[in-house]
Picture: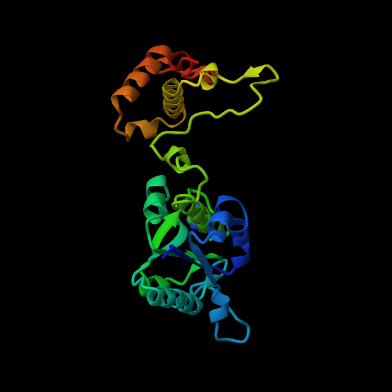
Length: 267
Ligand code: ADE
């Protein structure tokens, strides 16, 4: 059984960006996963199909009504239960949630099913959370107009992890963060563009030297742009020695980014 991703959203059409292009579109076409939408408006019981209302206690904005969301979530869970997934992970996208990172993405990619709730308006009637155990997940400390873009971010990051989703078997493993480091620089033809040359080592055919150069570049970039990642990571002997060389070369002060890791990387 391929993983099933269910999205509760008032705007399923937004997800065509995900389902119709690139890596994610291809993965869905090739049935590496299933994507299904539940529109709370289809679960309203009034003739106006009302999904929101004014907040009790007053205040600006509207609140999403509990009943259509409850019924939509229950419908998604019922379908999944019939397919053999008794307790799918339920995720509510909200800026109040735990901040998404690559480790969480890799965990989500192992799930047989996900139900993502994309909210709109000022918020959701709190009683929904008393009825369903939703994890809260944020894609960063800023506020978007709804949970659809965050849900797409989660799905894109998850789907690219599915076996067979990426053309080259190593691509996901070599992504930034996959090894706890930022990605190294990449080059393709032409060899010289307006006087800018491709590093010589990449044209040498020496695979060990190329791997070492790439690791050195990743370490240098991570050290300069995201030193917090290095502090939280165990280092191999080679990584430690390359980092020591970078420290000797650049010290702790400001560096010239164009020079990062070039001498010790041997390019
Ligand atoms: N909904 C609105 N903003 C969001 C964010 N930053 N992360 C997740 N869901 C959101």
